[in-house]
Image 1 (cartoon, rainbow, N blue to C red):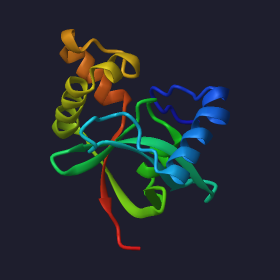
Image 2: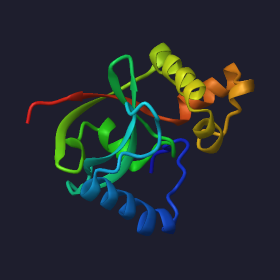
Image 3: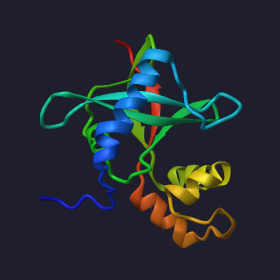
Image 4: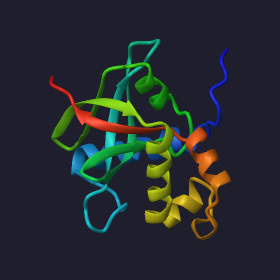
Length: 160
């Protein structure tokens, strides 16, 4: 078995209550979350094909908009959906009645570091709660840990 790095395994509550409830709210009522008061960032359902099973998996994910591009961040580390996207699996992103096939390109290097620095500055509460950093005392060591432990994907539309 290979080492996957940091991964915060989902709790039973998250797997059996929170994720299904969020998927229901997003798909049925178009709930987009509370990430951004300006309305550009949303919560959507990421559907991705398993890299080994070939089965479709559905995960509520935060979609951050920066510079006109959409991004997915693995707040729980090297999650299964991130590993499936990295393997090149087919994926869709959607809410309510709009589902769009996507292509996910993983960020790395300076581009990823710049994005993580922006993310910590923009979402101070999420930086503290999920990324475990203090935005007021954000160091280069924190940045190195975040870029190592949390995958970031740029999302582009794909032709069906």
